[in-house]
Length: 251
Image 1 (tube, rainbow, N blue to C red):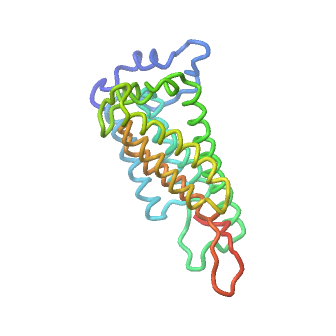
Image 2 (cartoon, rainbow, N blue to C red):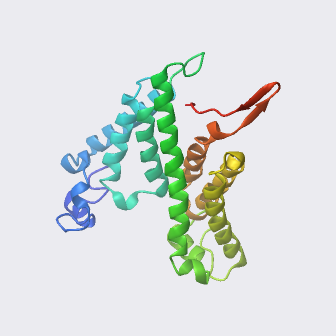
C-alpha cells in the first residue's frame, strides 16, 4: 500500500473501464479511490482483521461481518484484476453471516427468530455453492480447451500451482482435468439428495483441493469446505429408539 503500489488512481480507473458504457465501472466503489494514501489502505486491512477476530469470538453480532464485508469490498473494487475466485465466495459468505452471525447458547438455537434467520443463512450458503458448482461445470464445458485437452496447460501457465506449468498432452494433466470436471458435477448432484450429502461434502472438498493445487489459490479449499459444511444440517442421523432426524437450524 505504499505510494502507488496498485498503480495510481487514474490507471486503476482506466483498467476497470471508467466512463465506458457496458463495463460496469459505475458500480465500482472504494475508499481507496477517494483516499489513495497508504494509511487508508492499512486502516482498511486492520479494521477488517479486527472484525474477523470479533466474529471468531462471537462478538459484534451482525455489525462485525458487515464491516468486514465493507473492508473486503473496498479492497476488491480498488483492484478487481487481483481478486481470486475464493475471495469472491468469501465476500458472499460475509454477507450471509450478516443474516445469522451465530451466538453461544447452551440450549442451542432457542428463539423462533434465530431459527428462521439461521435457516435463511444456511439456504443462501447452500444455493450459492450449488449454483457455483453448476456454473463452473457449465463454464468449463463451453470452452474448447476443455475438449481438446489443453485447458489444464493453459490454466497452470497463467496461474501455476503446486505442480507448476503442466505441458499439453500430459496424462497427469488429463487426469487432473477429468477430476476437476467430475468433482464439480458429482458434488452438484450429490448435494441435492439428503441421503448423499455426506458424500457430496467430500466430493466438494476434492473439487476445492484440485482447484487449489492447480491454481495456487490455497484459500479456495478452505472456502469450499466452509460452504460444504452448510449442508451438514441436511445429513440424516439415526439414534436408538428415535425416529430419523434432520437438523434444519444450525449455525
